[in-house]
Structure formats: structure tokens, C-alpha cells
Image (tube, rainbow, N blue to C red; front, top):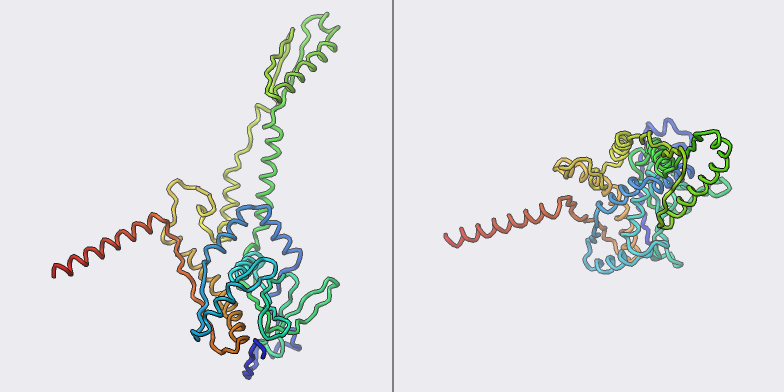
Length: 376
């Protein structure tokens, strides 16, 4: 018995699509990113810590879920499967698969996974998170029949024989969340590189020792005295590196200055903050959740909480069909025919003090209500 059930439902071809296409491959979904674009986004996450931190926080804030089967007799078996299903080399449980799936959606704009059957083809052996840069999505016999192709190293595409085992999701329009961030990240990295170079130049103090002969005799022996001053100065500087303090003593007119002491380092607070504001607005994360305390009185307001909650709800809507498809496939593999639905945990972005105050007020209200009931 196959664990993927297909229902033969007659499809009506939309006139707008059929009038424009000449072959089945003309109707394409938003293509996955190219390999070079994937490498670019990976490089951004590796070089700009705030981008990687924001994506990881979105994944954690999305919260947990529980899959409910309408047939209560199959619920224990479903729970065991979701907690122990193998997910490639990353670990076990459906939560691990969904976290990697959402990570791919946020970073590359789409994600693909595969439900891998066992050698009998009657049960699920595990789940696999695929590489979206090697995937192409197109319509099959009709626009509602999705087909997949994998690009081989030689550049040729191989049609996937069992598209019913593939789970695929993309953001609106297939546009990655990080699109537009590379330009800003490039400017930000150049600023940080210049800051490092300026500190190498001015932060690592260098000295200019100038000896000025004061008489004709000094001019005659200026070379020897300059070399002696250089040796003594070098010895004093090397000794300080080992924690020894040596005084430099010389005779004559010797002038010592710090190279670059009259120059000031550029103030980069304004341009760096402007760039970070643009990047954070793209990621839709409040700044203080990333450790950016731009205001001493900044805290999450109800409006910010509502905006972030709506963002998390959007990602949940993308993940819910994937979770249901995997869960239903397992139910079908056991011989059941009961659909599943997902119950997400409540999104709560309030701080602990606000929660404690709310619990205190609720307890006080209950106590007052009990007193009123007893008095009646």
C-alpha cells in the first residue's frame, strides 16, 4: 500500500494560461535561486552577525506546534513518529526539519524537502532538507500539477520521478528575504574594514624620533649619534613589550612625537546606524531584540508586538501545509484515512515583569470575586 494517496479530481484549465502556453514547461513557478546567489547569502550570514542573529531569532520566535489527528487512536503513533523521524544528518523529529525548512525560506526565499520512503515503499524512513539552488519547479499536465527537476553537475536537468514526495514552499513572489541586503552589507563591511585599518595606523602608536645637531661637532658625529639613539629607542620599546620599563636618555636636541596623533578617527556611528536600520527594517525585527539599544527608554510597545506577531503568523501559514502533508503521509502509510491539523503555540512577546503583573492582577480579581460570592 502506498503511503501517498492520490485523488483523481478533474481539473479545469484556466483560459488565460492555456491561451499563452505552448508546452507544459512554459508555466513556471518562481525559480529557486542560482548557486552563486545562494553562496552570496551564505556569505552575508557568515560576515554580518546581525543578519544571522535576526534569522535565528525569527525561527525561535515562530514557536512550537502540535499535530492533531482526527482519529484519536492514531495520535500516539503519530506523536512517536514526529518526535523520532530521522532528518538527514541534522538529527531527529519534525521540529528539526521545520527549523531547517524555515531557515531556507528566510535565507533563500524558498525551501524544498523530501519525504523519503523505506526500501518497501510502504512507510516513511525519514525526511530530507534539499538544496533549493539545484531545484527547478514547473507545471505538469496542468498548472495545478507541480513538477520538479534537479540540476546535475553537468548542467542537465533530471525530472523527479515522484513529485508527490516533495514538499516545496516559497515566499511571496519567490523573493528571498535577504534580497537588497548585499548592497548594504557591502558598504557596512567596507566601513568596518576602514575602522580596522585606521586603528592599525593610529591605534598602534608609532613614534618619530628626530635628532637635531646643535653644533659643528654634532654635525660631524650626527650619523653615529643617530644610530645610537635608534638602538637605545628600539631597546626601550622592545622591553616594554615584556613588561619592563626603561627610560630613554639622550644628549642634545631630540624631539619625540607620536605619528598621526594630530589626526582624529572618523565618527562612524551615524552611517553604521543608518545601514543597520535599513537591514533591520528588511528583516522586520525590533532593534532591541538584537542587542541594539538605540534609545535608553526603548521597549516593545503593543504596536511593535502586533507587527512582529503578524510576521510570525505569516511564516506559520507557510509552514502549516508542509507539516500537514508530512503528517498525512504518515497516517496514510499506517492504513488510516484521517486528516491532520496543526495547533501552534501562542505567540507571547511580553516580558516577564508584565506577565507576572498580569498574573497578580488576575489572582487579585479572582480573590475579590470569591469574597463577593461568599458575602452574598
